[in-house]
Image (cartoon, rainbow, N blue to C red; front, side, top):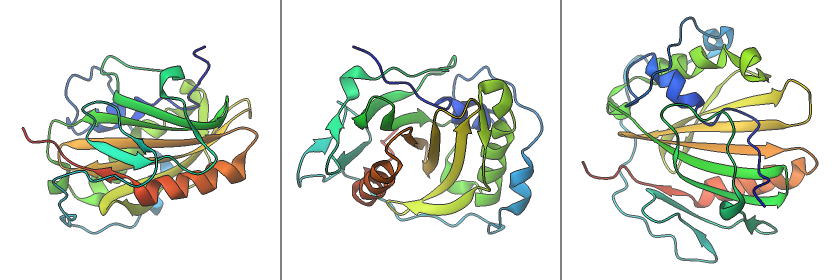
Length: 217
């Protein structure tokens, strides 16, 4: 039964990065920017993140769709729900290598990949943050609301932005991580409805174990 439902458009980054023409094959047009972007403090020039060239997830139960440029360990108390995954709001440039782990039907961590047209390592964090914020400004029409300012962080040494959102009807909430490494963007959606504590713990565990590479071109 394909019951998994993503609270937020997982293709969000496609629309966001289309502003800077980074994402290949996207037909979404985005104008304007979210107010939250004005609160993001970032360096003026790109800081090249550490380079990972191989994946080596070996301990415990490893989650890695075939050919995916990432892998991670199944968090304690979760089950692999990849085969039951249904993603809402996909765009003309859908995500790739989707995976999901869950503790309940609507309490799920989803990982998806989007290829980029340009090398994100050569783009300043400020520009990346602004492009993510631009599409988040469309939240109301997509059925969700941004509930806090974006926070710049790192995942597997790569630059990332954490953004909290909630579904407009209040049924779901989520922390979304946009992770950039070279020509690859990985989106991590930590969604909860009834099991917030478990999702937050599992999301932290997964982010600690995930490995991400930028495949050769």
